[in-house]
Image (cartoon, rainbow, N blue to C red; front, top):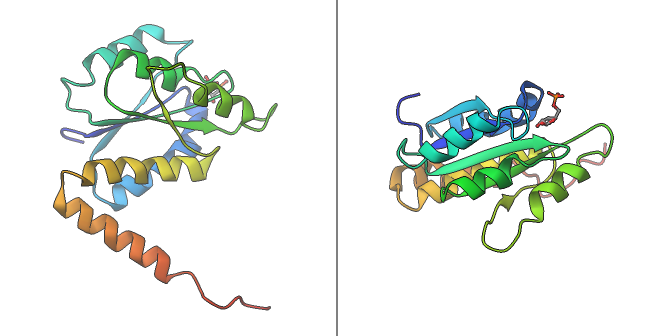
Length: 162
Ligand code: RP5
């Protein structure tokens, strides 16, 4: 996409099924983004370059998903002032609690906005990014308001008793 405002990064190809939720909602809201595999452990130089150039490339929000020893969001936050939204990817061994704690417990000074574990967290990361951009973008704000109203209207008031 030309001039993406959101960067979606993930530690591994295996994170894509989760992170696709963020991409899908940004597509729906017509927000430009790009996607990259950037691993804190396997490709640290790529991480550094990505963070160092994020501002000049026009990124306004970075969504970073990783699982296990999930250092990617925090390391990215250490390298750029672009706000980082962290998505803890669900893991087999510890169910994603490892990812959650790794991303959540940042030291004072380098915040990461941490979402819920798994696909719901990735979807909410996309919505959070859209909400941040909508502060300066009236057309996006309108699309986001319409999306929220439609979701609300889709929730039945009376449960189906089967
Ligand atoms: C992390 O390790 C990735 O973010 C992924 O969630 C996890 C497992 O990676 P793979 O072994 O599937 O490549 O770095």
